[in-house]
Image 1 (tube, rainbow, N blue to C red):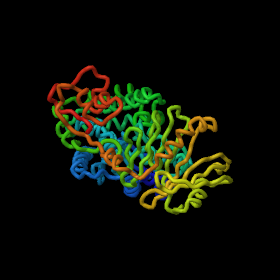
Image 2 (image 1 turned 45 degrees about the vertical axis):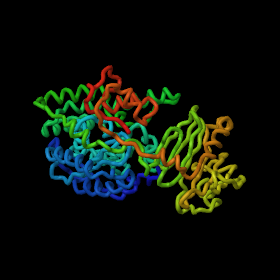
Image 3 (image 1 turned 90 degrees about the horizontal axis):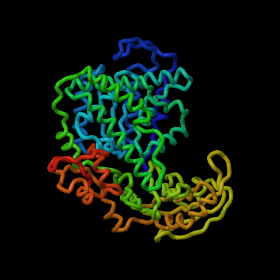
Length: 498
């Protein structure tokens, strides 16, 4: 939850290369292209940004799974057009549906995307596509275009790739962070031709390593189904379907991609008998699913953070959104809510100082109170916004467990919306607490488990799973059967969440 912001912009600005570029032969096309980022610069930018990615997301703490993914990636990279690079493949500790690459040979998949894939060949399809972006130097090409446009050599290389990889959760958060600190051009997605070329290269690398390139089609299908499920779940809960950047949104249309991959796969016809499903399911058995304790956990209407020892409960019908630097409780109408933020260390623990630094008050009143035994100060008045305007504001500063200080900010579309939801906002604020014994029992992490498909089908698995709501549909989704009118054979190994 309170992970550091992604600081790739500052980092990559430091690697800016002056001048109009030098000629370099593209290892994939064999054509000479002018570039502002030669191979040494690619590697340097990738090495430095790699540390920032690990700091932002975290490396998933499972050596066996890391070795498994790295082994598949290395096998694919050895058959690529840039086998000489020192390739690095990393599983990130994130529930997001995400995969991206940095220049110089750094490729990432999240445990989030791995939970939805069903075979080693599908994983190879994702890795092969990202390897293709690196081998064709798409990041360097984009950096060159940005500099030509007068924007400097910022590796959208990185930012575009990260945005490309955002799934249903997190994309809007990252986009807003970027928009506050960089020109919009820095987050442009890959071009249609670059995406199709990465698909073609991925298919070629799969075929060279005896994976059927048609598995790339399965990856598109499972990701599209994931978006359909998220949209249908939102509608069932009376919310707007998720929008904004996603892994698929930055790519060519699915129909176009499907036709292109199928035509490419026809070129690499062969006897592909082993998709590695058994190996893959063995590798991800026990892998964490959803939020982790380090990020905070959403359990029904409650937000629980075992490491920070804090909890917050949303009113019935409200939505809990666990962002990278804040938790937001939003009402059903989507026009009012409560935002909880951890006050930065430099703000100190004095409530008045925190109010001055985080709210920039122009006028107003403060009053002392307690929230479940925790010292708190409530502010009601006028503050100065980031744009310099003045706005009415209400917020509460709380001294939480472990000497940490939190800001609970009332938010609403307008004064009327806030007034209508005020009692519920105050109830949400009043739920802020140190975690109780019941909270700690509820805060157990979930994991992917492989089991024999029972006679009772997905309905039986759903009754034994903590997934809610629409647990049966969700289990179908992670088993690549979403929307399908069929079930696996009894006894077949499938995935569930426990």
